[in-house]
Each structure stands twice: as C-alpha cells, then as structure tokens.
Amino acid sequence: MASAFVTGGSGFIGGRLIERLRADGHTVHALARSTSAADRVRERGAEPVDGDLADAAAMRAGAEGCELAFHAAATLGDWGTREEFERGNVDGTRHALRACAEAGVRRFVHVSTEAVLLAGGPLVNVDESAPLRPDSPALYSSTKARAEQAVLAANGERFETVVVRPRFVWGVGDTTLLPVMLETVRSGRFAWIGGGRHRTSTTHVENTVEGLVLGATRGRPGNVYFVTDGEPVVFREFVSELLASQGVTAPSRSIPVWAGSALARAGEAGWRILPLPGRPPLTRFAFWVSSQECTIRIDKAREQLGYAPVKSIADGLAELRAA
Image 1 (cartoon, rainbow, N blue to C red):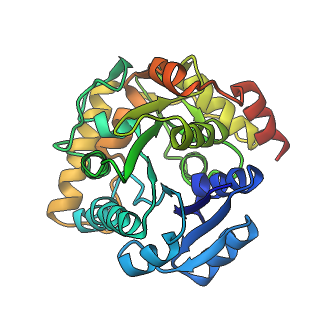
Image 2 (tube, rainbow, N blue to C red; image 1 turned 180 degrees about the horizontal axis):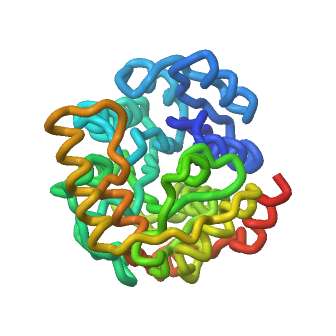
C-alpha cells in the first residue's frame, strides 16, 4: 500500500484519517508541532514528523517517499487576528504544497470547507460551481478560500491536487463545534437566532474521512468535491440532539435575526477598534451559521467518486450518547 503524509494529524479530522489510512494498510507520517501532538499521532499509528506549517524543510522530509499527502491542518474558529489566519491557512497551505511537490508526492488532498463560499448570505442547494469568496469579511472564510485557490493552482501533471469540502463536521472526539456549544449553554450565553429552524447540511467525521480517501483514490486532478451526511437537517433539531447526547438540554431562548445581525456587527467593530479583551459575544461568522440556511449538493462526489455516507446521523448520535 502507499505511504501517506498528513498534516493536522493530532486534530479531530486528521486523527480519524490516520486511523482509517492505517486500517487500509497505509504507512503514515504525520506532522507534529509538539510532544503532545507527537504522542497523539503515534497513538493513532502514525510516525511523528517534528515541525509545523512554517517549517517547509520538515514537511519535505516527512513527505519523502510518500505517494499521498493530506492537508488537514488549519487555523479554525470565528475570531482571531488576520495574521493568525493568514499564517495558518494561507502561508501554511503554500508551504505544505511546495514541500510535498518537492518531495515527489503524487497526489495532495486538501481539507476545505463550505465556509470558502460564505460572505454574508445563505447557501441554498449549492454545489462546486459556486464562486469562492476570498473577499469575505470573515477571516476564516477568506483565508480558507485563498488556501483553496493555491491548492487548485498547484495542480499539474506530476503533482495532482484535489479539494474535499465537508460541512459541519461532528462525531465522537469532536474538539471544536460541540465543546464550544456546550460551553456556551453552560455559561448562559446560548440563544437561537430567528428560532433556529433553518436547514443545514452536516458531515459526520467518518463520512468526512471517506470523502478524503475517495478524493485520494478516485478524485479527478484539479477538482473540488463536497461531502455531507446526505439530506439536510433542521439546525435547531440537530444541535438539540448533539447537546442532549451530552446530557445537556438546549435552551428555548431566541433572539430576532435583526438583533443577532446588529449584535455581531457592533461586537466585531468594538472588539477590533478599541480593542477589547477576549472575544465578541457573537461574530458575523457565528451569526451566519446560526441563522442562515446552508444546504449542499453532493451529486458530483456521488458520480465521480462513488461517494455515499458510511455513517448515518442516527448511528452517529447513538455513538455520541454511548461515549
């Protein structure tokens, strides 16, 4: 089987990806920027490679002899400085591309997101033809869009690149979305925006990994693929189920959409201009996700990759309750 190089292997998606690659018989090298990260990737079956996204030499050495590379490392979240997001998402991706190309990697699979299309409006039944929004006022969206542009531009005859976009990744071991929602509820700051009855697409982590593996084996060079759990869900119902799986009841409090929009804009402006410590109570990105439809078509992945969800929402929720 082929050898693979993984960035972000100590994280939620990257860790599950390492486990899948090892189960499929691949040898895996994984970038690790700390001792604790090295321990986590080693526990999942990968050989740690000391370094970070700024260390192109370390990545090149780690990718030597690997046929495949998966770039799962990123700066996540809805708040931070421009420099943090630029360094993690744009510069880091460019360094990874250059290192893997120089190491002779045949195919580079990039973990992207529907956020590359978000700039203030809802996404309704969108597919891969929707334009990227590097001009988005949300730093996560704009920098991930520019990272994706760099990945697609790097595609060539000897160095193939493929982009896979999951949406709202969830499941056992989630270190991002669910912990933040639980903290928000427990602190008394949680409220639905406009009732939370809009529809949203989701992608269980195992479905995400399935899409990444298929992108590596069947994806067409220079192409982008959305992967989801299939049919969209009602945001309020799904989030309530996630919280209930952890023994937490979702609050009933709701604020109007106009109030949420005003709070997000005013909060971001105040925190940027003054500046204030910590983070705003609501950011524009969080407002978009919490109040607007985001439904994704996966026809292209079904047709070109043979993709189908391997984990149902019902089974994923049952696993969360059991865990």
